[in-house]
Length: 110
Image 1 (cartoon, rainbow, N blue to C red):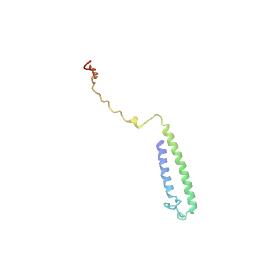
Image 2: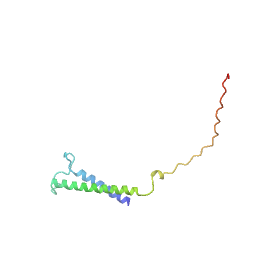
Image 3: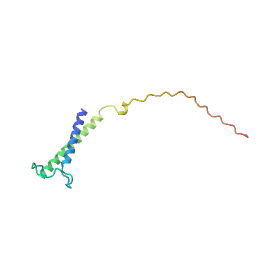
Image 4: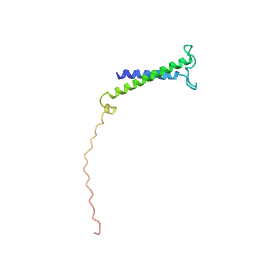
């Protein structure tokens, strides 16, 4: 189920990017959505349509983000990638003899 929501989320993301790039910028710099869009709508109508589509896609994007966050939180157990990595094999160290402490030397002349 989580994979299906993730695919839908990615499709919405791509659609949102496309709609935002088509909109005419305020400065008129990079926008390609200006004009009448081939006589289909007026400039104001196309701006309103693109604004509404952007708002709807943003709301759906937010909802799918929340759904994915909830699904990840309720997955159960603290499964981490570090839990899946096998522990390195323990290397046995040879038993060392404990070092004997140095004997204090008696100062000469006392």
